[in-house]
Image 1 (tube, rainbow, N blue to C red):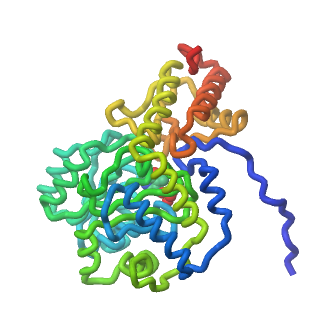
Image 2: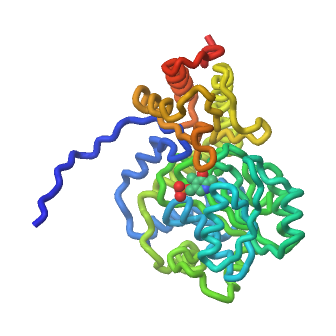
Image 3: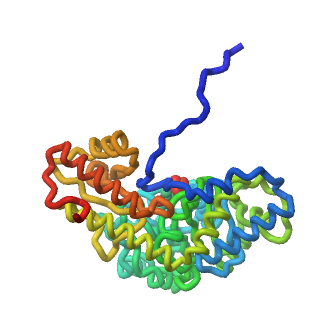
Length: 387
Ligand SMILES: *Cc1c(COP(=O)(O)O)cnc(C)c1O
């Protein structure tokens, strides 16, 4: 017999989460998640699912019938989008030189799709002219766009222009809205997006586990008329919609608690109002940006593509980026993140998402960064917080 390990009751440090995700969970979401479970066919639970769908339609700004939550994280929704929309042999245009694009390329190959690598270097957003050229030179079926890139802090502009190009070539668009949903302006229907997915644990400030996804009728028809079955049974949208739609067929046990959390987080979005919420993210992140610049540091993303929900800051040459991150964690219990992949060591990534996007957190973070820089003998131009 193996003896039981010695563990204490759950006792976590109290952190301020200002990284690329997760964000801090809203207290009302936490309360909702402490509610007792219901069976997945309980009429009360089915009503909760209906509420989630309606609230998601508002948050995505869509009338799509196929609007649901995927059991899993943002990556599961990404895989569901690629797996359902892309058929073997079909061509997917994706920026392979970007972190999330590379992930989509790997998923595309796994479902038998062909990757048309869009090798734009640097961190600038996609340029519609380059996209038009790629479409002119290749017979593209699906086009992946990252609306809010958490690795670079870049917000993709010209969304309608990009989806128009795809549609002129009878192609479909998959848009990654993981870091934009409810944090920055997003209009799924008006922008002509075919498939979009978000995330519960970024600007929505819920828990990972139930991830928003929406599919328009055009993409639904493509999925329902596939020649081959979607190769993931678990992520088969047609089967999932038999549970989310009128049939109410058992597919898998719904993650009850994350659904409770998602519903409450979406109610908070509706209460605040989308436009107010976008504005709050801008305002709070503007204060962060101003403080960063007062100290003499520079934002890594150009102002016109700035993504308020994820702020990238250039690490000065004389500063050790990880020492600053550790200082923030050790002295102030604040989490921020370093650069990912090619940007490792060059930038810090500071999230301003959902419940984390509050002035008190920004003030505390700026004070902490200033101290961390001083600890490394970096002379700030001016105090981060205006007197
Ligand atoms: C966080 C993130 C993901 C992945 O989401 P997980 O919930 O970590 O699986 C995908 N795309 C973008 C843009 C993200 O920021």
